[in-house]
Length: 73
Image (spheres, rainbow, N blue to C red):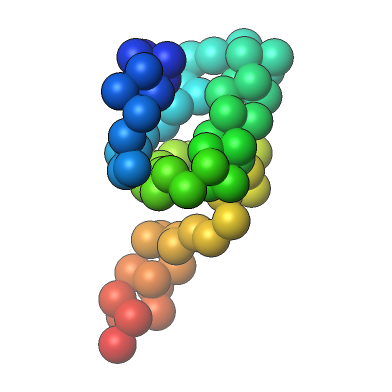
């Protein structure tokens, strides 16, 4: 699915749980691609529970933490 999304050469890519159900090697490959996209001027928005995927991103928002903090108020 990621390859299909990249084939369109988007400026914005929305990705939901890109490493779910993947083995560790495949997940690491997907995370590397996501990290590279940010350096290629592609905005990538990722929803994930995977800390390795989160760490592949330059910036992140922890929605669980925001909910505990009162939604950012």
